[in-house]
Image 1 (cartoon, rainbow, N blue to C red):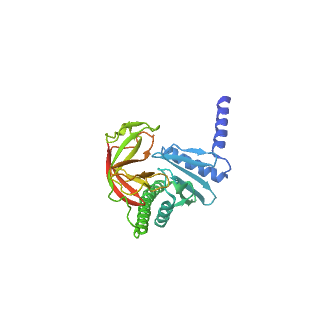
Image 2 (spheres, one colour):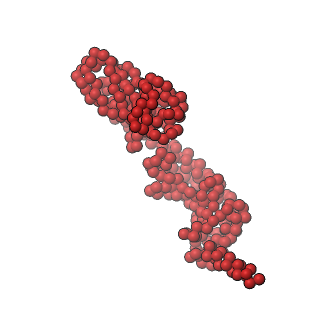
Image 3 (cartoon, helix red, strand yellow):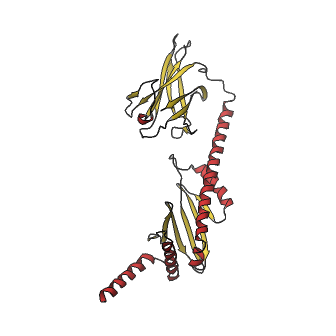
Length: 307
């Protein structure tokens, strides 16, 4: 009996330490009731002792709830936000701000805040007792789902609007510029595969296969050039089969390089720096659109296929 009593005391002491850290007795009671509700409904809750939040996951998404104040209690309900940054999978800051403002105007309960590296998703609810909060718990989760959906839609719209505005500005800036002297002088473009060390894996004009595609290099053929040797900066813009362009970090082109076109009565070829990545699976099978530019002017378009 003494052993049982000792175990009960140890369990009680552990439970008290587990739940009650810098909480008032009323807050601790509310936290225990919230934990019990989540546990009963199979949310598998945990308590983060660093901030006393009750954490759980739904569909792999992390949620956490903090309890503050008293009479009534303030429940601050968080959902894992969106990453903001330059990485490909992250959200861009400017369109994220536009989307967050639109969502905040539409939704009265859940609010978004764009910080330096993430978009915070938070709901704050006052409740006299935990039962008042848990009674509409499922409704709160649906609110988060709607906000997630609305934010992504608004973000995509903002990204498209930003892209369209940039393209219009570029077109406006080019209105009074003369066309490139290389216009109508390109006889064709061919492509080959290289490995990370620059060694050829597939020769020019040979099939490009996705399983060994890492880096791709373009060779441009020009018709006879009657002027003196001239230096040019050539750029390539590659668009994936799904319509998404491939860009260098911070640039609007996929690849670029300085070349010299020599005075010649014959056709000549120049090579542009390779583009791609050593990451397996980057190149998907399909048809890729190619635009060759000089001085911002598209001088040639073609496609290549990855099998």
